[in-house]
Length: 393
Image 1: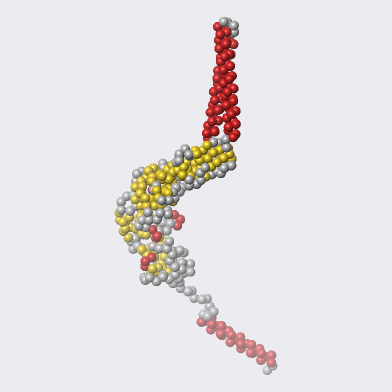
Image 2 (image 1 turned 90 degrees about the vertical axis):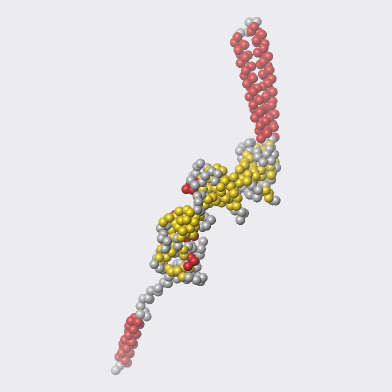
């Protein structure tokens, strides 16, 4: 047998051995498609699951609000002139009528002198017209002049009298401008904002200062149109001020705006709020954020869930329930809310036996396997798209 034939037989033998090995591996599934890994169910702690239960709810409305001064004023320029002095700064206390700023009056004084001279000239011409008229009255009695000449003298006298009145009015107007050059506070209060500095040229009606009187405040609340029907003038309210934790103020609805705000579709409610004096000044300041709470109706027992269980994605309230070992998102109809107890009435969409997630979780999807476990251990999350740990809001 030749050497070439020997090598050919060896190659065939190796090929047959490799094919047998591959067939065995394929039969055993070693090189086949991997078996699908079973995803374990999401586990939720028993404390994170609730059911609809009858609870007593008090209908309490809560509105965002802000504090504002009842008496406030923006001091504006009545001249177009240069500011010579500004006598107050932010935080200064002023009384009504106090001088707070002054304008440069050099040009106004020159114009006043011109108006005075114009008035004196008009008065002199009026005196001359009166003498001319008296002389003509004597002459017409003696038939030395015609009636037409007498009428001309009367007309000249009336015209000159009108010229005197016009000059007096112009002088009075100049006197007013000189008085407006001294700016006085229209109300008593504190300077909230100073808009100008000495040396600035300001236009007519430009803002100079903003004054607020903190002695009497009011809270302006924004109420949704749907809640206004339950609000009445004189109704008692509770006011919480941001920055004053643990303290609330009692008040009553003083006014209700008859029209809604075009942009937000809310109605403004106003509550009077007397301020308090403290060692450092006033306790409350204009511009503080507040919240107005009020109770309407009486307590009654209704099916309820915690507010934290309700989702409002897309404007439709819904909840997540665990049914038949799977997660399901269920639309619900809600009613009254009790903000203090953090409860909401469930009008429809759930049965008393439905198990509802009371804590908010991220990345939940319909159909995910889920089960409830007991104990204090952390819930296990099997799906990578679900949260690593329950995160409540």
